[in-house]
Image (cartoon, rainbow, N blue to C red):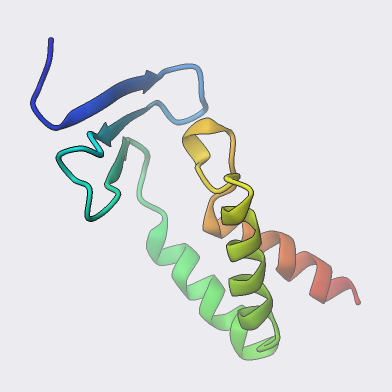
Length: 102
């Protein structure tokens, strides 16, 4: 089945959180890249946000390191969790643990 504007539709049921990834056709959407990922899991965002805020209050040096590392990971195309990359929260936890143990 072809839907106008969709380049690829993938379903990853083998991952811990089943997800659907939709990549838009770059010819029709040349001015911007649109990748949409839909997954179903209990929403823990509120818990994550409060932990991040508390952690940044204690260790403010994490913020610039986070944005730097996130950009580096993106340059090597390792930022897409659907393809085995790291989510932002995973990057934050990694930095938090490193800074906390120094």
